[in-house]
Each structure stands twice: as C-alpha cells, then as structure tokens.
Image (cartoon, rainbow over all chains, first blue to last red; front, side):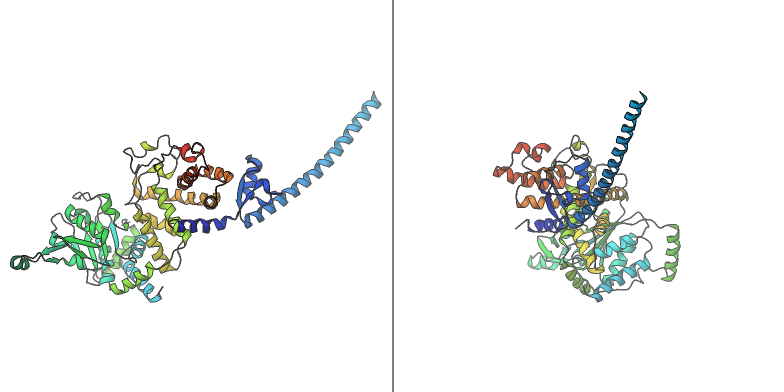
Length: 101
Length: 405
C-alpha cells in the first residue's frame, strides 16, 4: 500500500490529539478544551462543531470550568445581596415619600 | 551503533577542528554527511578562507594519502578524469580498451575549484554523482561507494556556470565564513603548533573499510515516523504551489497575485527543492541519531540550513543564508500551529469515513495550510467520484484548482 506509512504518520501524530467530541453531544462542556471552550464562548462557534481534545486538555478544562463555576456562584451570591439591599433602599424610599408627602 | 566506530568519527571531527579554526557547525555537518553511501560535499567560500584545506583535512582523515584530487580547470583532460584508450590494444587488435582514470577508481575523490571545470567534465561527473557510474568510449565503469569533496569560490570571475541540477547532486553545501579577530590569533597558534603544515600533520583516523561499516550501520537506522513526517512536511512546504509554478511560464511573485496563499512561504520561492533534499535530510538525521543517540525536529531545521541553499531559487534574494533562516523560522511557527490545530488527526478521521461536520472543519483549516489543502483535495476527488460530495462545494472548487493537478 503506497500510503501506508503516511497513514502510520497520521495515526502516530493523531494519537497525541486525543478524541473527537461533538459539543452538542456533550452534557457538560467539561469535554471541551479550554481554548476551544473560549472559542465557543467568545467566538460564537456553534454547538454542533466538533472539537478534538486529549486527556490533559480535558483535565485542564475541568479545572477551568470549576474555577468558572466558583466565580459564577460567588457572583450569584453577590447579586442576591445587592438585590436585597436595593429592595430595602427602595422600600425606605417609598416609606419616606409616603410619610413626607 | 558500534561505540568504537562512533569514537572514530568523533576523533575525526576533533582532529579536523584542531586544525581548522571556526566554522564548527559547518564542520559538524560535513562530518555527518560523510556517514552515508556515495557522500558528496561542496565547500563554498571566498578566496583564502580555507576551503581547499578543509577538503584535504577531511580526505586525509579518512583515506590517508590514498585519494585523488582533480584541479578544476577548463583544460582538464578527459583521460585525467574518466579514462583513456589503451592505444596498443587499439592498434594491434582494433579493440577499444579503456584504462580508467585513478580519479574514477579512487574511493576518496577531491575536486578543487569545481566551478572552473569545463562543461564536458562537469557532465561526466554529474552522471557519476547521479548513478554511481561513468561512461567513456561506450564503456561503463561501476564505481561503488566513494566520498567526493569539492570546493569552489562562487565569486570566481573565471567561473563556468554549471546548471542547477549539477549542484543539486551535492548532498550538502557548507559556506565558510572569514575568521574573526580572536580566531585569527587562534589560527596563528595552530599554525605554530603544527609547524605551518596543517594538512601534513592530519592523521588518518579511520580506514575506508571502517567508513563503509559505519555507512552500513547508518543506513539501517530507523527514524521515527513523526520525524520522517516532519522532514517530508518541511520539504513539501517549500515545493508546493496550488497554481503549479513548476510548469508555469510565470513564476512567483507575479504568479502569486490574487492567490489565497500569497502570505505563505510558497510565495517566496521561485523554484523549490528537489526530492534529493528529503533524501539528504533523512540521511543526515540518521547519521545524527547514530552518532549522538538522538535527533529532534529542531536538529532537522538546523540541518536544513545546509541542505537547502543550493537547491532553492528564491523570488527575491538578498543574502541566501539570511533568507533561508527566515524561511526556517517561519516553518518552525507553522509546524507549531499545525500541532495546535490537530489537523492530521482530522485528516486521519476523514480517511476512515466522510463526515460533513469534520470536513467543514478540515476545509477551514486547509485555507491556512496549502499542504493540508493538497491532501484534503486528494480525498475530495475520491468523495466527488463516489457522489458523496458536490464539486461546487469542494475546497478544490473554492480555490480554483484545476482537476488535473
């Protein structure tokens, strides 16, 4: 076979690349690479796109996702607090207006 | 690898370096180049930089005094280079018997000032370098293994202009640079040490038989398939042209106007290297692996610096080494980008079966890499013939590549 050694080359190089994942088939985006997740988030890649990732990249991504999730829950807490404060301020303002007027 | 044989080679390199100041990388490449069968080396340098000295040091280190040198001159005779007729046989028996020249029979051959050789002699040597045989008076002589070291001053005004294929037959061309101030002092010290006779003091470090054994071992060294891929990719990057520059009357940069890949390395190259560049780089990589126990992709890029300059015609040359260095720097980046894109894995998957989403991704990548595009187009042709893909939606159609390519 003329192209055998070429296919051998593709296989050897490919082994480093990992596996193919389809974004639409993954329940969690932890199966995407960090860089490609950023692509999805910021460059508008469609979820039907395929990505190729290896274990190391998936591990790296998991850590990144966990970090992002921590950030998001922190922001949610913050958001909740701000909402309560805003609500209180608004109530005070309404009471003030009613009492004064 | 036999360690005693490797010791010989290291000793040869040390003995040469002990007598030849500077140009360490050039000497190392010249030594590596000796480790394959029918090795040919061309040393280029301006007048008085030591090209003949280096040639003699290398020949003496391997062959002692058993080598033959032809001085390049327009008047050099056919009999001196190839062979002459045995007159008594012709006169008495009417038989054309050829007495082959010692240059042809010698295992160690030197060509001084190769650019001064007349075209007839150059043509015979060209044939010898190509096929390992010579012809004279309708008779053939099979040469077998040999080592040929030549030198020339490319700015010599008496030069014959030999055709590019002649130079392509030289595995490696090393360019020597003049000595720096401190190196001049070193040369004086060396001349004093060896009593002004650098070449005479050079010992024979190994025999031709040892060298043959080494060459046999080196030829059996197996390179990793990834490294082979790296060499093939590097050379293909320098050859490829989606507009077929090899058959076009218009050459880059004019040919590249409006081409999608105008920013690629291919647009800098008027004539790419021949397949010999791949063969020689592979031989050098094997030699390095044999001698040093390892060879990396970075080594391949460094070795390419000595394999490419005499095999490439650039669209615009300012200083060939600097231009080649720049091309190799860009290649280094390109290889890294390929790794990040994981494109060869995609291609492997597409070889298994057609998948539209994967193909779309591959086509996107192909627009950044003409070599990848070329391989994808090969697959497209198969898919089109099977009716899996429409011609109009193919990359080949988008890039305007004719079907015969």
